[in-house]
Amino acid sequence: MTDPIAEVVSLLKPIPSISKLVTGGGRWLVERTELGSPFYCAVVEGRCRMTIAGREPMLLTAGDFVLVPEVFSFTMSSLEPPHRGALAQRLETSPGVFRLGDPDAPAEFSAMVGHCAFGSDDKALLVSLLPEVIHIRGEDRLTVLVRMINEETRHDRTAREMVLRRLLEVLLIEALRSTGGAAAPPGLLRGMADPQLAPALRRIHEDPGRSITVDALAQDSAMSRSTFFERFRREVGVAPIEYAIGWRMALAKELLRSDIAKAEIAQRVGYGSASAFSVAFSRHVGTSPGAYARSNAGVTEGVIVSTEVV
Image 1: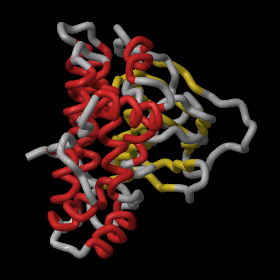
Image 2 (image 1 turned 180 degrees about the horizontal axis):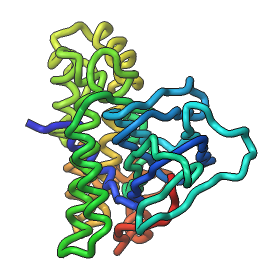
Image 3 (image 1 turned 45 degrees about the vertical axis):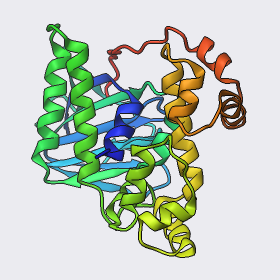
Image 4 (image 1 turned 30 degrees about the vertical axis):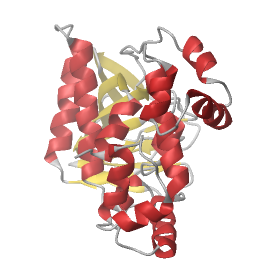
């Protein structure tokens, strides 16, 4: 059976970029404004404070994991940070290992931090299905995965790029697994946690080429049309057909990067003819399928290694 979470992570095409071990002593603060990439962090030892723009500060302790799929400004600091505007103290003590704060003070905090990119051309839609911030406590598997990414980044081993991509995919799936449930914000995770909505979501992902109507999806979910519509919109955050069309277009973009004929793509994503697909795609994306395919021909993604600290 199709797994919508796995499909979303696969289509996002996560690409590792930064992976660092950061230690801190004394008073320290790191500030990032308008980051261009998603961020994750696994606290190994000690405590720190993380403040994401527009949210209440979070206290992170050893064993905590944070993933921010969207791009936000944030600060990380010691529990008693220095005055804002104070000159940041950071020192690379060895390749990929950074010291924050007073270099002569005992190291009271350590964390593995990383950034990644999403290679999907439809990442805005896909990221919108996920929580804005994921904060998980006490999941050792997440720390192990971040450590493996950190170690793999340091070495020029055979198949390094493939290993890093796969590890990052598993890290994202593990984080999303640990976040699902009724307490999750509206989105795919919350919808999949609803035993009546999950069959409809799986059907949309499993067979995007079939005719999709609210009535049929409501029947899959054993609910009346009106009850299903309102529940889907409340739990997933968008109306059922809006979700289905968005998913079809995300798949169509991926297929247009291949050598598959436009008529076959149209059939795979639920349109009776290439012309009907072209009209729908142009309306949704703002360009024709042919123009999109030409502009994305030969586009590839690679692993980017950066020297940013946090």
